[in-house]
Image 1 (cartoon, helix red, strand yellow):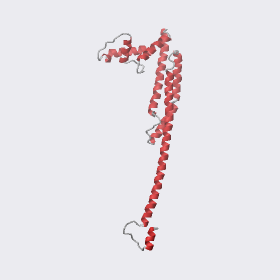
Image 2 (cartoon, rainbow, N blue to C red):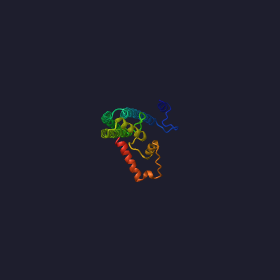
Image 3 (tube, rainbow, N blue to C red):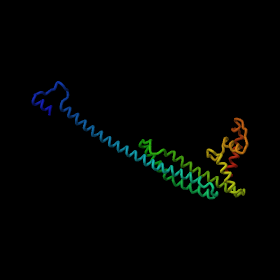
Image 4 (cartoon, rainbow, N blue to C red):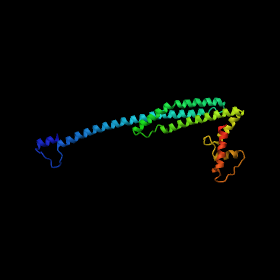
Length: 231
Protein backbone atom coordinates (compact mmCIF):
# COMPACT_ATOMS: atom_id res chain seq x y z
CA UNK A 1 0.00 0.00 0.00
CA UNK A 2 2.80 2.42 0.81
CA UNK A 3 4.46 1.72 -2.53
CA UNK A 4 1.20 2.39 -4.38
CA UNK A 5 0.57 5.59 -2.42
CA UNK A 6 4.05 6.94 -3.26
CA UNK A 7 3.52 6.19 -6.94
CA UNK A 8 0.01 7.65 -7.23
CA UNK A 9 0.05 10.59 -4.87
CA UNK A 10 3.71 11.65 -4.90
CA UNK A 11 4.18 10.70 -8.54
CA UNK A 12 7.55 9.12 -7.65
CA UNK A 13 8.55 6.05 -9.63
CA UNK A 14 12.09 5.53 -8.34
CA UNK A 15 13.21 5.70 -4.69
CA UNK A 16 16.79 6.98 -4.29
CA UNK A 17 17.00 5.51 -0.80
CA UNK A 18 16.71 1.82 -1.76
CA UNK A 19 17.41 -0.37 -4.74
CA UNK A 20 14.59 -2.84 -3.93
CA UNK A 21 11.45 -2.83 -6.04
CA UNK A 22 8.11 -4.01 -4.77
CA UNK A 23 8.13 -6.93 -7.17
CA UNK A 24 11.47 -8.10 -5.82
CA UNK A 25 10.26 -7.90 -2.22
CA UNK A 26 7.14 -9.90 -3.07
CA UNK A 27 9.31 -12.52 -4.78
CA UNK A 28 11.58 -12.76 -1.73
CA UNK A 29 8.52 -13.09 0.52
CA UNK A 30 7.05 -15.87 -1.57
CA UNK A 31 10.39 -17.69 -1.76
CA UNK A 32 10.85 -17.43 2.02
CA UNK A 33 7.41 -18.91 2.58
CA UNK A 34 8.18 -21.78 0.20
CA UNK A 35 11.54 -22.47 1.86
CA UNK A 36 9.91 -22.39 5.31
CA UNK A 37 7.26 -24.87 4.23
CA UNK A 38 9.90 -27.18 2.78
CA UNK A 39 12.02 -26.91 5.92
CA UNK A 40 9.05 -27.74 8.16
CA UNK A 41 8.36 -30.77 5.98
CA UNK A 42 12.01 -31.89 6.26
CA UNK A 43 11.91 -31.48 10.04
CA UNK A 44 8.70 -33.51 10.30
CA UNK A 45 10.22 -36.27 8.18
CA UNK A 46 13.41 -36.28 10.27
CA UNK A 47 11.36 -36.40 13.48
CA UNK A 48 9.39 -39.37 12.13
CA UNK A 49 12.67 -41.06 11.14
CA UNK A 50 14.16 -40.56 14.60
CA UNK A 51 10.99 -41.90 16.23
CA UNK A 52 11.19 -44.96 13.97
CA UNK A 53 14.88 -45.44 14.81
CA UNK A 54 14.12 -45.19 18.53
CA UNK A 55 11.41 -47.83 18.21
CA UNK A 56 13.94 -50.08 16.47
CA UNK A 57 16.39 -49.54 19.35
CA UNK A 58 13.70 -50.39 21.91
CA UNK A 59 12.65 -53.51 20.00
CA UNK A 60 16.25 -54.71 19.73
CA UNK A 61 16.87 -53.95 23.41
CA UNK A 62 13.73 -55.80 24.50
CA UNK A 63 14.71 -58.98 22.65
CA UNK A 64 18.39 -58.67 23.62
CA UNK A 65 17.76 -58.13 27.33
CA UNK A 66 15.34 -61.06 27.49
CA UNK A 67 17.76 -63.31 25.59
CA UNK A 68 20.63 -62.34 27.92
CA UNK A 69 18.43 -63.21 30.93
CA UNK A 70 17.59 -66.52 29.23
CA UNK A 71 21.29 -67.38 28.83
CA UNK A 72 21.94 -66.47 32.47
CA UNK A 73 19.08 -68.71 33.60
CA UNK A 74 20.50 -71.63 31.58
CA UNK A 75 23.93 -71.14 33.16
CA UNK A 76 22.37 -71.09 36.63
CA UNK A 77 20.41 -74.27 35.94
CA UNK A 78 23.57 -76.01 34.73
CA UNK A 79 25.17 -75.46 38.13
CA UNK A 80 22.08 -75.82 40.32
CA UNK A 81 22.06 -79.61 40.67
CA UNK A 82 25.67 -80.37 41.60
CA UNK A 83 24.54 -82.50 44.53
CA UNK A 84 22.19 -84.71 42.50
CA UNK A 85 23.21 -88.05 41.05
CA UNK A 86 25.44 -88.14 38.00
CA UNK A 87 22.58 -89.47 35.89
CA UNK A 88 20.28 -86.67 37.04
CA UNK A 89 22.98 -84.09 36.34
CA UNK A 90 23.51 -85.52 32.87
CA UNK A 91 19.78 -85.46 32.16
CA UNK A 92 19.61 -81.83 33.31
CA UNK A 93 22.55 -80.78 31.11
CA UNK A 94 20.94 -82.45 28.07
CA UNK A 95 17.67 -80.63 28.81
CA UNK A 96 19.47 -77.29 29.09
CA UNK A 97 21.36 -77.87 25.85
CA UNK A 98 18.07 -78.59 24.08
CA UNK A 99 16.61 -75.41 25.57
CA UNK A 100 19.53 -73.22 24.53
CA UNK A 101 19.52 -74.68 21.02
CA UNK A 102 15.80 -73.94 20.74
CA UNK A 103 16.63 -70.35 21.69
CA UNK A 104 18.59 -69.99 18.45
CA UNK A 105 15.39 -68.74 16.82
CA UNK A 106 15.40 -65.72 19.12
CA UNK A 107 19.10 -65.15 18.46
CA UNK A 108 18.44 -65.24 14.70
CA UNK A 109 15.76 -62.56 15.15
CA UNK A 110 18.15 -60.40 17.18
CA UNK A 111 20.82 -60.70 14.49
CA UNK A 112 18.25 -59.79 11.82
CA UNK A 113 17.21 -56.70 13.80
CA UNK A 114 20.86 -55.78 14.24
CA UNK A 115 21.47 -56.06 10.49
CA UNK A 116 18.50 -53.79 9.79
CA UNK A 117 19.79 -51.22 12.29
CA UNK A 118 23.27 -51.28 10.77
CA UNK A 119 21.78 -50.68 7.32
CA UNK A 120 20.09 -47.59 8.80
CA UNK A 121 23.43 -46.58 10.36
CA UNK A 122 22.12 -47.04 13.91
CA UNK A 123 25.09 -48.02 16.04
CA UNK A 124 24.13 -46.63 19.47
CA UNK A 125 21.47 -47.98 21.82
CA UNK A 126 20.87 -46.50 25.25
CA UNK A 127 18.27 -49.15 26.09
CA UNK A 128 20.63 -52.14 26.32
CA UNK A 129 24.25 -52.99 27.03
CA UNK A 130 24.09 -56.11 24.87
CA UNK A 131 25.17 -56.55 21.26
CA UNK A 132 24.21 -59.18 18.71
CA UNK A 133 27.83 -60.35 18.54
CA UNK A 134 28.16 -60.63 22.32
CA UNK A 135 24.92 -62.59 22.63
CA UNK A 136 25.96 -64.91 19.83
CA UNK A 137 29.27 -65.59 21.57
CA UNK A 138 27.48 -66.20 24.88
CA UNK A 139 25.05 -68.61 23.20
CA UNK A 140 27.91 -70.52 21.60
CA UNK A 141 29.77 -70.57 24.93
CA UNK A 142 26.80 -72.16 26.71
CA UNK A 143 26.55 -74.81 23.96
CA UNK A 144 30.22 -75.66 24.44
CA UNK A 145 29.78 -75.70 28.22
CA UNK A 146 26.90 -78.18 27.90
CA UNK A 147 28.97 -80.45 25.67
CA UNK A 148 31.96 -80.34 28.03
CA UNK A 149 29.76 -81.11 31.02
CA UNK A 150 28.12 -84.01 29.21
CA UNK A 151 31.49 -85.52 28.31
CA UNK A 152 32.71 -85.09 31.88
CA UNK A 153 29.56 -86.60 33.41
CA UNK A 154 29.59 -89.56 31.04
CA UNK A 155 33.25 -90.20 31.88
CA UNK A 156 32.48 -89.93 35.59
CA UNK A 157 29.65 -92.46 35.21
CA UNK A 158 31.96 -94.77 33.27
CA UNK A 159 34.76 -94.33 35.82
CA UNK A 160 32.37 -95.12 38.66
CA UNK A 161 31.21 -98.32 36.98
CA UNK A 162 34.79 -99.43 36.21
CA UNK A 163 36.44 -98.56 39.51
CA UNK A 164 33.61 -99.11 41.92
CA UNK A 165 34.35 -95.72 43.47
CA UNK A 166 31.27 -94.22 45.05
CA UNK A 167 29.51 -91.35 43.37
CA UNK A 168 29.96 -89.25 46.51
CA UNK A 169 33.73 -89.71 46.34
CA UNK A 170 33.84 -88.79 42.65
CA UNK A 171 31.71 -85.72 43.36
CA UNK A 172 34.11 -84.73 46.16
CA UNK A 173 37.06 -84.93 43.77
CA UNK A 174 35.15 -82.98 41.14
CA UNK A 175 34.33 -80.18 43.58
CA UNK A 176 37.98 -80.11 44.66
CA UNK A 177 39.11 -79.81 41.05
CA UNK A 178 36.61 -77.03 40.36
CA UNK A 179 37.78 -75.19 43.47
CA UNK A 180 41.31 -74.89 42.08
CA UNK A 181 40.16 -74.34 38.48
CA UNK A 182 39.75 -70.61 39.12
CA UNK A 183 39.28 -69.60 35.47
CA UNK A 184 36.75 -72.40 34.80
CA UNK A 185 38.66 -73.71 31.78
CA UNK A 186 38.33 -77.35 32.81
CA UNK A 187 42.12 -77.60 33.07
CA UNK A 188 44.60 -76.65 35.78
CA UNK A 189 47.40 -74.34 34.72
CA UNK A 190 50.77 -73.93 36.43
CA UNK A 191 49.57 -71.46 39.08
CA UNK A 192 46.46 -73.49 39.87
CA UNK A 193 48.48 -76.70 40.12
CA UNK A 194 50.90 -75.05 42.56
CA UNK A 195 47.93 -73.95 44.69
CA UNK A 196 46.60 -77.52 44.72
CA UNK A 197 49.93 -78.97 45.90
CA UNK A 198 50.39 -76.18 48.44
CA UNK A 199 47.00 -77.08 49.96
CA UNK A 200 48.40 -80.61 50.43
CA UNK A 201 51.49 -79.24 52.15
CA UNK A 202 53.71 -79.87 49.12
CA UNK A 203 55.98 -77.13 47.79
CA UNK A 204 56.91 -77.81 44.17
CA UNK A 205 60.04 -75.69 44.52
CA UNK A 206 60.26 -75.04 40.79
CA UNK A 207 62.84 -72.65 39.42
CA UNK A 208 62.00 -70.01 36.83
CA UNK A 209 61.46 -71.69 33.50
CA UNK A 210 60.75 -75.16 34.92
CA UNK A 211 57.00 -74.69 34.41
CA UNK A 212 57.68 -74.37 30.67
CA UNK A 213 59.80 -77.51 30.37
CA UNK A 214 58.54 -80.48 28.39
CA UNK A 215 58.67 -82.73 31.47
CA UNK A 216 56.58 -80.41 33.60
CA UNK A 217 54.06 -79.79 30.81
CA UNK A 218 53.69 -83.55 30.41
CA UNK A 219 53.09 -83.94 34.18
CA UNK A 220 50.54 -81.12 34.04
CA UNK A 221 48.74 -82.77 31.12
CA UNK A 222 48.63 -86.13 32.92
CA UNK A 223 47.29 -84.51 36.09
CA UNK A 224 44.55 -82.78 34.13
CA UNK A 225 43.72 -86.01 32.32
CA UNK A 226 43.57 -87.99 35.55
CA UNK A 227 41.68 -85.59 37.73
CA UNK A 228 39.34 -84.03 35.20
CA UNK A 229 38.53 -86.42 32.44
CA UNK A 230 38.38 -89.53 34.63
CA UNK A 231 36.60 -87.95 37.54
